[in-house]
Amino acid sequence: MNVQQIMQELERKHPGESEYLQAVREVLISVQDVYNQHPEFERAKLIERLIEPERIITFRVPWVDDKGEVHVNLGYRVQFNSAIGPYKGGLRFHSSVNLSILKFLGFEQTFKNALTTLPMGGAKGGSDFSIRGRSDAEVMRFCQAFMAELYHYIGPDEDVPAGDIGVGGREIGYLFGAYKKLTHQWNGVITGKGLEWGGSRIRPEATGFGALYFVSQMMATHDLDLKGKTVALSGFGNVAWGAATKATQLGAKVITISGPDGYIYDSEGISGEKIDYMLELRSSGNDVCQPYADEFPGSQFFPGKKPWEQKADVYLTCATQNELNGDDAAKILARHPLCVAEVSNMGCTEEATKAFIAARQLFAPGKAVNAGGVATSGLEMTQNSIRLHWSAEEVDKELHKIMHSIHEQCVRYGKEPDGYVNYVKGANIAGFMKVANAMMAQGIV
Ligand code: GLU
Image (tube, rainbow, N blue to C red; front, side, top):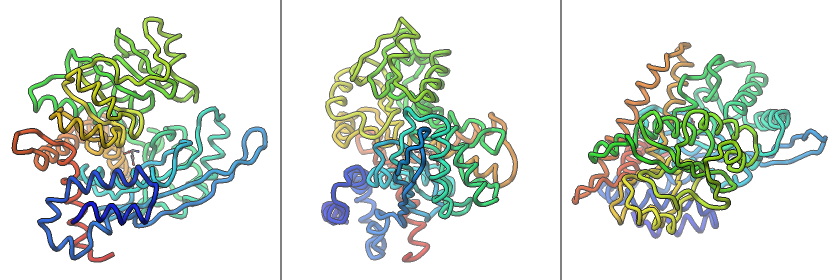
């Protein structure tokens, strides 16, 4: 494989799709050596097939706001790869959503899902609709309009969406209700459902919990311990909430959270009622930092700034893609942290990732660290299929096992001659090999 040539061709076909091209480039660089040991991959044009989504569905979503005004948003589902299971991946509702972002997310999801050890293909979808400032009734009407088109293309053995940025428990409820009304079917077609109607225990917390299990293991493997350490994290949504909760339970002190308006530094630690307050902020649809600073006077609000400027032992990106850039990485590296991990999908820019690896920083990528979310979605699908509910202990035990296995795979494929574990390379190769072998077995399709 000639990475440069493949990337040039991809850029020609999809000009300007920067996030998608970035995600593909990172994986190709990681897997090229392994790939070149398999001439049968080259003959089967495996990479050329793997980097293009199997199918993209786009549609318009017309809906009426509370004042009677009509809006037209764009809706998408990128069904990236179904080699190892039905398409699986979240829906993102955010004004920044476009095809490049959903293609990068679907591509990442394919390898992430492969790492979970569960039979799930990769997909992503969503809309440029933003829940910010919208009433409950508006969100419901939007979800119904979105599902009125999407339901044609999803199903429990075909494609199983879930949440992502802007799509939490409330939105999943409206989407599921609309699907059921349109199809007359009650099945496990969406994950992240409420506990009383088919959801799995631990699913809301799973991305953050799984991330902290992974980070703990990364640290333990390097004779480090999270206990008593400070954690700087970004975000204020579901992922940041789960990560802050588990980090606190494991004895660490979370000192930052962030929103679109800046970040909060709280030297006393963001725990207990402060963590619960994050969830209230998320559903309020408003800015988060100022209300937090007003509610908890010991904290400091830094408008327009990122939490990466604070000193901490552990840094976790929990907000969105490319939220930590080369300058941020330089600042973080100067403080010699114990561990840096992406919990958001592709939380670091290419420059930042390169800087961490070049400095031999203990660092892991989102597709390994945040896989606990989709893994628990997989466990929700299992429970729906067998029509049973597992206890929180059972789900948590499975989640532990899965995160442990992902860590093992990263170490197996990522250990370099100098002993450094390159988790980026490890995760990419492990995920890639599983998908590649399945695609080879299934012929040219
Ligand atoms: N959006 C989440 C992710 O990035 C979860 C997807 C799912 O549960 O299907 O992995």
